[in-house]
Length: 197
Image 1 (cartoon, one colour):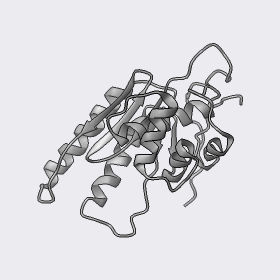
Image 2: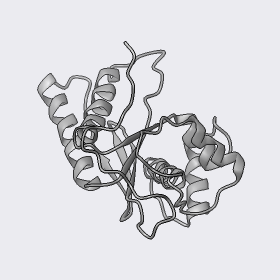
Image 3: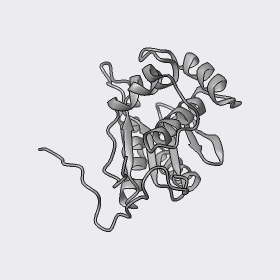
């Protein structure tokens, strides 16, 4: 089945880039153990712990809790940039839970007609460091240097980079990045937003 991404019925068209209005963009690094969130208010993290022996009810409760916190922290925004799911060549015990959490969060925003951009992990790394295969520690260091942010975890660093990518795509970059880094924007699945670029 082919899915064609089109604006949801009744979706508000955004003003053209370069207007006085600042876009509200959120970046989300979705994780079972620590979802990173970046908004105009800064960065935060939703830490949780689970056990392999947890019942279905306990696992469901955990996913609901994370989703609720994320949606509450983000609020109403113009664009949400989420890191895309990684390829699970060797699925572990929590593969279904990770996938379920990702879809719950994405569905929460899609259901509210908030555009969602899906950013491959390699694009996030390239935008931050210039190298698509950069490790999370390199992304954390790059985010702290480029944005002058104090980031206690790589989850928050990833979320900040995702937010920065969304703002850059909309013509309101947090800071200027080298062209080689900015080329990472081409690898993102951007939603139709009605933005004159």
